Image: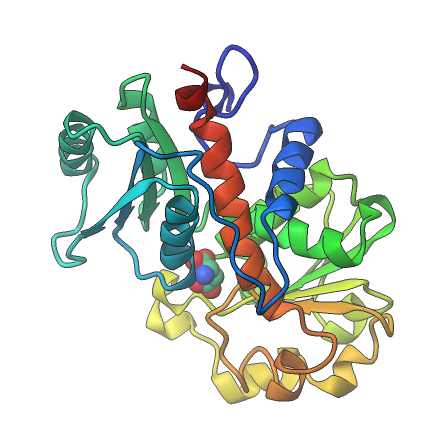
Length: 318
Ligand code: ASP
């Protein structure tokens, strides 16, 4: 999606990681890494984006993503406004654009959008004034680009050679924007062995995820994996009748210590959260020594700082 880039190749909007160059992704990851501090150390703060305003427009629930976009903007000195959009007045393309034009008139520089309807961040990006950037904070089941970046940053901190990694993505892949963005970024960074592990009903359509291997048992998919990425069942994106029974699911697809032993001994375990302990993951694994789930949360702020810094850098230059 070239509309994401400015003529000089810098990032203007972030809607999807697909088709972003490896150089741009590595630049964002390096910048994000510069914002990471050990737990207990003071968070990095700067005035780099002083005078800029970021609006969070979320029409789907969010905890980590919304809070971390807000913290990221504030730690760079920007002002933040959070719009409480009633889920009951379901946003349609047109009314979303009216809201966007209002925010634009109020001199908003970056608009962070989460929406359950496919296409909304891209539609908004194609209508805003040249001075406004649009950042997706989760688009339906389609994309969650800052999650993809924070996942890659987390992997890179433990296993920097993406080319040689075996990455297993496990669970409700069919409805997961996290899995789609993960596959885009890991591919761009050179990972060839990408495994999708899911029951047949949660596997994506055959034409999706080209080049990934598919496994319907954890035992097969986890073998010798370096990275195990667990996913939540996206119950909000499926009919009640299609929901797997939680206990039954855990029996076959829950990540327990015994199953994790099939992966490499130094494998890392990831989860985008919210987690359903005892459904897709056992507490002993979620809180265990191989889990990097809390690092993912910390890295989320750093990645969002890097993205805001990149898309609003022109403001500083001017
Ligand atoms: N928080 C992630 C998302 O917004 C994962 C999830 O909800 O399961 O997609």
